[in-house]
Length: 269
Image (cartoon, rainbow, N blue to C red):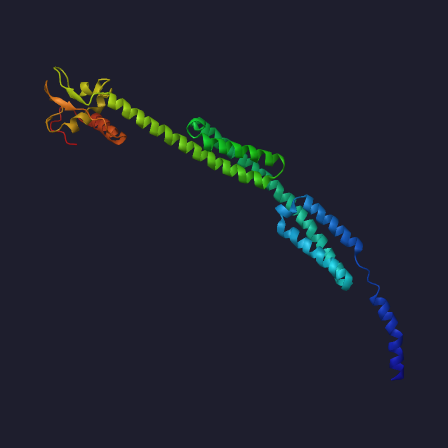
């Protein structure tokens, strides 16, 4: 028993000495910090946030362990270095891809604005067109600053606004065209008295009527009560000339005129 106690007493200083031989990984922690800085400069917080956060947490853990759990801190700091390196590599790759996508988005927005301009959006939808133009300019500035994610976001929005501007311009022009057409129709006669030698074809061809001989079925259908045969009308008959017809009705009339055989008595609509 005495010998055992003596042996323990002899070994205890060596055990304490060995336990105190672990030096905190000061240089390794400094290296990990430098690697984390490189990852940050490569854009890891934005382009590889999860990997960057993991490396950051491991570094903090290693620093805390170096004060109380020396051996463990060495393993942790090595892992922090590895994760910082991975974060940097992932960020570089993701940033390059983001640059490609941002450039594509800028080109899409430019194309959309060109189409809007061709649709006369600056004239008929100026607010939408200007908003799209401003956003694209901002996107291009972000691209120059290498803010690729923000650049793409603004370019996509610019393309959407440009499309809306184009559609709005087309709609406004169509509405104006309809209004102009209605004004023209109102300025033209709404009735016609048949003169000798006239037929529905001739009447329809008059500039003041329709200016298109194939639109004669419109007159026929509007006056069927007194036109029993569209090929047989009489001088003195007074016909209503429709002015409120739709594009669909006009096309139907032209189709009817083109495909109706000559001398077809009692045509039905």
